[in-house]
Length: 382
Image (tube, rainbow, N blue to C red; front, side):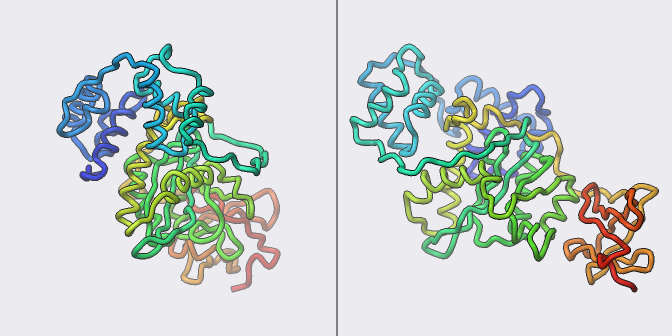
């Protein structure tokens, strides 16, 4: 991923944060970020010596931690709230700790809340309490990613459709892109860049409908077929149950509150610039309550599964009945025409015996895409 001027600091920060993990291959990490090992070690050395300031191009300012009086503390609280108007006492206290404030000089989170209240910086509490529902969570980073489009909004030159990808375990924002549409090709181009940088997940959780699939018209799309080809299992939320992708939905609420609802945007470039700046804060500075007030970057690490620039050939077992899907989305099998799906036109699929006579599983790569019963209307005579 080339280091453009607009996001060089964000990419350098990601590099040094991920490089601290003992399980990360530093050579592979540098390759994904499109820099040499020499450059990677240079930024690591500067980061260890100067912290985040060392990642800037023209700054040699050292990190310092002077003692501060209570008046300075109150000023710092107000200033931090000014930069992040949606943060409360707990997030501000944790962020001040992360910035180097000694524990003994900081007051309790409830006291910081009172400071905000005295300065008129607290919004009125919501009258509706959130409903409870069963929460699930992946056990490791990259085990599951959540992906969706946030509701579009108007800019001065058209609509913006924010595409978001979130790691389920760490809540790390892997992608936040201002898109002009919600088409499969747009999503695939952006996911290719994400996969090259962070590697491949094992599963991806999406909503239903275009371009994700799993609806009444199209169970699979070209996008989900491509994910399967990469060795990623696509899964979908239950219809009319957005809480299934609740972490990404919660991310959308935070994005709206802290970015979208607070300004007007000129165009998509303006949106992207604001998204990039906020994404860095979200990943590396904003404490997350569900992570015990750690930041997402403190929990996330890149996937060891690299993105293959050239896809290997599909291999099936010797007992499989391999067929090529024709232009009508069907295969010919045992004198019958079996419909597979338009997403797999031109691809090879495998039909496998089950324990039930006449019932076959249809696989594309590692993924079972459907079952077909040759004794029923699942198929038709040739």
